[in-house]
Image (cartoon, rainbow, N blue to C red; front, side, top):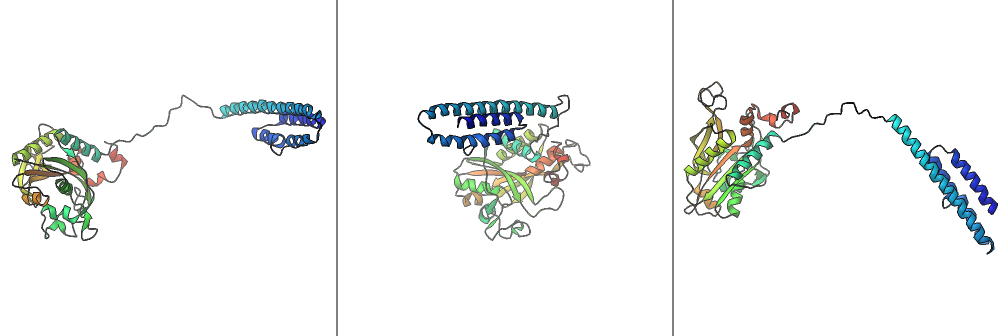
Length: 340
């Protein structure tokens, strides 16, 4: 057995010296030192040796194994270093080459305007409230005092899911939910997506974004409403901007008003953009909350009053950035979006 062990040692060390890669080295290790390797098989015969022979052969076996393992480790390190040097020769890095540019994203213009509007109203003491885009007909129309024959309730104007559920046509439904769940005083704004069959021109889209506000408290008047809107307009567009209130009709407010602002091109002087009037297009609608709406939400109209307003976030973005087609906000054209 002693001769077998020494013979294996010479054979293995010779093979290791001639190996050229790590895979070949691993194959040699398994062939001789593995569980079914030749050295292991020889050592299984130690049970047949005498008590005097076992320690002698055992020591020789350990020396042979250590010699083979040390040689394998030495050659493995040499092969790794060799591969590393060859890899460095092939994979040279030219630090003088220009790096590839990385395109960084940024906020979408609609999100920029939405967050700016929310921040303005938060600074004015309003809370931000959210609501579902899939809404009940009651919250979207009935509670808001919209009669059953109102044009907005037609299937040609509204996306109905069934007779009782629809895609909200305005964020006013969030006001209903808030008034049902919260006792006055209430001061909230809510922004989000709304949906209507509306694609008549470049300023309309079947899906658009609204921001609506609501204030309910004792002794709230039209003056409070007009002052709030005027402050908001000056904050978002500049202190030189003026507001004009015109009578209008909304079923959920009484009285109801539409708001125009100074023409952004001529600043009130009159030009071709504003048709010589000095005023831009209608920017938002507002009014005093209808007593019937307060009653529908469990609020006593004899004790409390309030005002509400709603504006299109998309329209504010179009005016603020001089965009003439609302579809540009939804087409994800990078040539357009990179301008912001």
